[in-house]
Length: 207
Image (cartoon, rainbow, N blue to C red; front, side, top):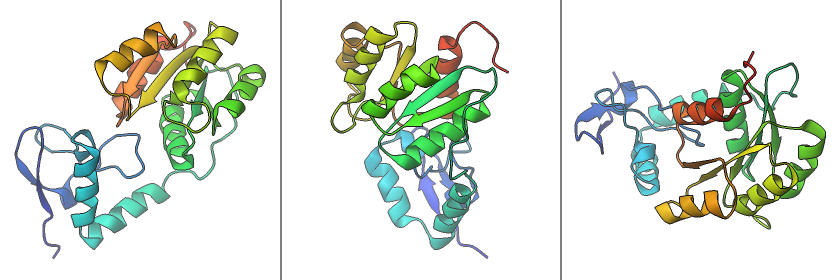
């Protein structure tokens, strides 16, 4: 019989057995568990809390996470069909795969780029309706990329996602200075992501 891995929820303060709780729905490399009482996950507490969660997790929890990740596709399928195209821009390959898997499940077609140069090249050939870009990337960060995209293709909607620029002033700056259409702070859960994409998608219905 497995010993319980009891943690205390940062949101409602109730204790629960993480080994028997469902994983959260966050676009992260390693999801944590969601509190059965209030639904809050450790990802939403802090990066320090999430790291501590995995340092202390028993082997059974580590294996469960590995099984969950192995279920994800290792390659992003080519965009095809009539649904709007969403471009995911992130220098972290695993995050690109997780985001692509989630966005595909919403009914969109997905393409991916590892940085600004690749994203700008795909902008002309693939004509995405929405671009979801990480803010902190080498060479050209996502905020600058957002501005470059909007100047070249004003109709393309751009969403900036960030774990670094979390203060309210950065969100205001993203809209006013970099012309962003959406702004998400990490960790982003599936519902938040879908809400933003649905709001920004072209008026034609997603297949």
